[in-house]
Length: 162
Ligand code: HEC
Image (tube, rainbow, N blue to C red; front, side, top):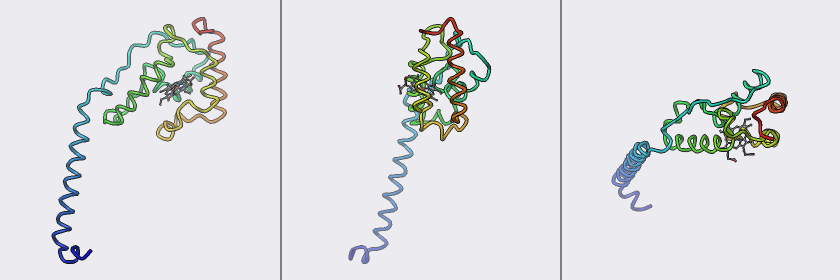
């Protein structure tokens, strides 16, 4: 404290330099991580087959709440270009597509029961995702409509898994 009082100018100048250095280091770091290749591909592979939706409304609900991560029609928003957000979104889309992909229904259909359970227990869409994407937040009546629609779709579809 006493040194501070004796050398106020010297100390605050030092502190300022310290903050400037820290700021520059942060900016350099943020720029540097942009060059890490993971997360920039933003691929939307071709749609090979969609489920045979029972109604346009069911598809609309699934598109709004699930398609960013569970289809080949991801809406890659501008900020998904910026690391580290790009890494997180890429990891989610990879994980989502591996588990359930409405755009490749012919190749790996998912059991209806599993999809319905994920909606019912509230784990899907993920809780951290909906605040940023309000249109993906399903009211309880929309949840019910989606579940009914999924059941109707896969009850009727020949390509659904048992
Ligand atoms: C923000 C991305 C995202 C959205 C939106 C999303 N999911 Fe997922 N989902 C994932 C990820 C990542 C996984 C794999 C990791 C895991 O198991 O938690 C997954 C896994 C799943 C699984 C398999 C695992 C399980 O819980 O049985 C199902 C089924 C599923 N999601 C259904 C849905 C449905 C239905 C919707 C829309 C109502 C939806 N998801 C919306 C990212 C998402």
